[in-house]
Amino acid sequence: MKKITIALMCMIMATGAAMAQKQFTFGPKVGFDLTNYWGENVEHGMKPSYQAGLFFEYRFTNRFSIAPEVVFAAQGGKYDTRANILGADVEVKETDNVNYINVPVMLKYYVIPQLSVDFGPQVGFNVYSKNTIEAKVNKEGGKITTDMKDFTKTVDFGLGLGFTYNIAEDVFVQGRYTMGLTDVFDNIKGKNGNIQVAIGYRF
Image (cartoon, rainbow, N blue to C red; front, side, top):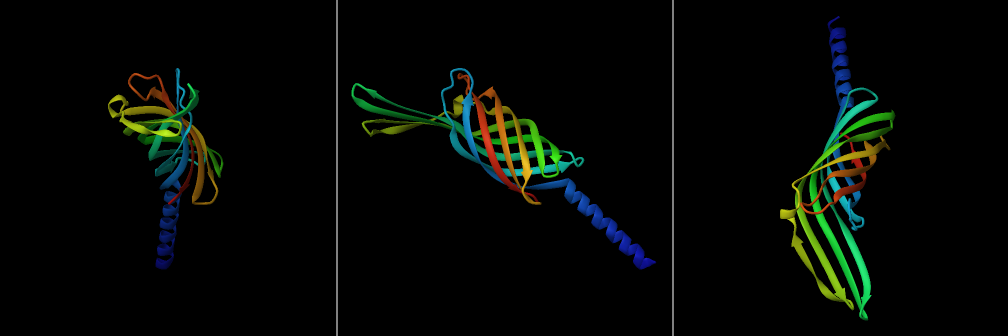
């Protein structure tokens, strides 16, 4: 009887541990981003970039979970123009590198066990903000980099919408668009836009 009791206790403890592991997962994620600005008179195009960080997920039920993240994201935008002025070939490339520590909190609804629809708010904290202009006339020229930290808002708010697909038990891919709700700079009407494709691993 004593052996049976011990065996049952071990089974209960193992089951509880398995349920806890199923309810709470965490791990790293990395991804490729296309970032830009949107708003009034914004002409910047998409800038290829990246993100990397950690996610945490807690499953309330088989259908619903909450997943906060802490992610470093290199954002910004770029604008290229080329023209012939008075017989000279003029090329101008402008790039904004505006980087954030982003904290999205995604609410996830599992349509099927492998696929969830994700939606939630995001707050970002600016850690780096510079503008680089490279100008060439007949393929000769130079570039100037300007620190924009004093003109960039410290906090950025946004909303994210996307999906997560589990390609294996511990590996997933994500697609998401995050739309900024606040202007990036003090005196310019432009908000962040970010298309993200990421891969992550669950522990």
